[in-house]
Image 1: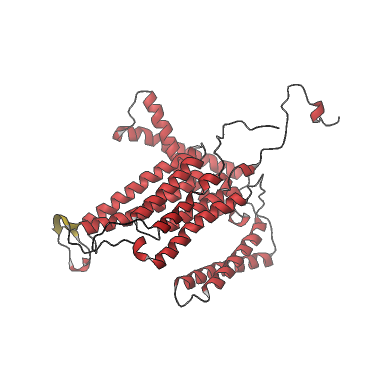
Image 2: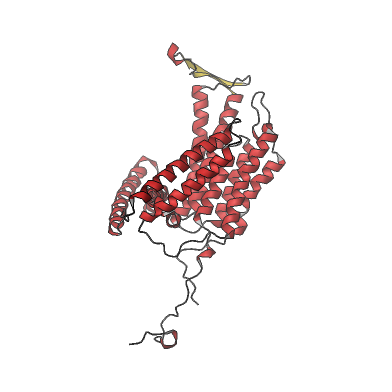
Length: 382
């Protein structure tokens, strides 16, 4: 019997057409590179105004581009975690003291005497404004780094990111993706259970509410882990193809040599003596590592269905993120006081203009990335 064509399809049957272009969504690797670049920029400064601008930049891009999925709602949890980090840093500065000298005493706490072998550690004593300001700057820098990582978790689909990894990194990528999706799934379960308890008129706060919510969440996590293990086993996870021993040895040599070259080149770039050989060794190490990953992918029997494309928008998003730390590093060389305001003597931080303009380059993905689509929305057919 001849195959049915579009002209002889049954009445009322849906008209089939080409699948919508995956180019409508941005490559997940571009989101991670953009977010990590902003996090790198956060480590290059302690200026609270620049750090706040970095946080606002990531928040605006997340609000504009994140999809309507459960794992995309984890950004608020990372913001709360960042606030907890700042509070803990301030508490440690008050309780354990700080090597930063200060003259503006806020309060004097009872000091606990310590033995001689604990020299350099202080419990209690004077708490100065300089100590608190230094601790706040330090905590805000770590908080900005966490928020930038949270932006990557909210914007990039973990499953699409796993599909884009090289075949040699597939097993390690599965472990990383499972670890990255644990927190978003846990947050979604907690929100769902708390909403269900509120609808039933039961308490969802306090110790009692935490116990009634925490136990079902842990039980659901265990069931999800068992289901994931069964699904991976059914799909043949871990199977490898037979490759000649010569290819395995070449792969191991290229990968190991490439990683050593990357380490040596990075060390050369960070030291004044290795400035001449640092960049060539780093590039050679990257090429060797990429060649090793390419050969190592021969052992993977995995195929990709509709792989994501790395298009011009992905290059622009990645480039906008990389421009931020590059310009801040240059600004630190030209005017280090602007990026690292002093606390002794205690002075108010100022917002340097062109480093702030460099941070605003990170807003480019909000205008380049397509509008987020709900996964439940029906796809258009041609």
